[in-house]
Image 1 (cartoon, rainbow, N blue to C red):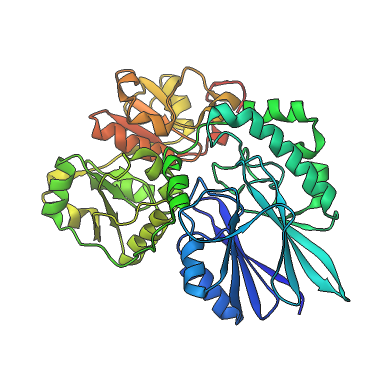
Image 2: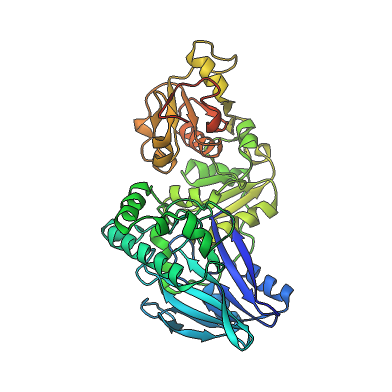
Length: 466
């Protein structure tokens, strides 16, 4: 049987893990912490996991590799130069790892995303010889981009960017144009220098499309470093956990909180997170809660905003939604929420006075309001607040808007000018989260629940182009 590579996508974090099998045994690459998904896939395919490999010590999620290897008895391949607090099979550049009569891995040092980053070329048996099928590139060569080089500190970013360029060139020289490229990052992860430009790729395509393979080293380094934006604060905890050896996860249900307990938690200033869609939140919610719907990258923004270790209570319509949120949170090391409640906002309120709503508008309404014709039922805007990231702002923004990225808003609320705030992002998700923080601080706010790409066509004056 030919080697088959299956993608295990974690869209909420923008990453991919992989299971490569020959019909009998399997290799797992860069598994997320909730390894039940991996084991289910292996079981469905009827294959035994014999090797678990890490391309690098991850900065954007807690790895499930150690626990997966423990449960399956697989060899756990980790870079020999990484000083870790657990037993593993150390591998280094030039090593060949036999997997079965049909599969083998070749270890290729590809520093850049981290100093000890490895890629793994996957070969399959072919008439008594070996044929390269593809390469697991982790945070090295991605689809149309590369992994960012500043996660180990700004002082290393320039050196690592040069390494990243050399590593990509090495992979392009080592492998044939038809070899598949299987990266871990690039699908929304902040570990990527920019986002993937395709759903799949080959070495040949990357030679044509990827700046790292088209630009000279100095030009690539300058362009890459200039394009880097902020990354989530919780990344500071991921590498530490992965070097030490993550504990197994506990996804059992957490304690329920009734209306009285919710009121007490909110009064204490704890994080009570509403996981419903932002439109449901706008219609009615508990005052003092924060909107981070499960339909978006909830764990990324919550992990970025919250003080690490602070108790978190989850609100959702169903127990299944709470369970989904728990699964997302363990991936970034938030192991056990403090409490949860399900149902409706009315059921969560100890009295009706706790309920609040958010007014919403679109960019056409903003254009009308700025022209002196504020739509009925809406207060005129004194401030337009843009909570997108810095690179988004630089690419084009609303004329006269105030810019505070969502991750900074909680500590910079005092910088929002007085008056009615109309807040926007790229789609409405971050704007609703920001509006909940503003409303909790006593501000009068309107959410622009609209696509930013529509702003200019709606008649909103722009700076720098939309």
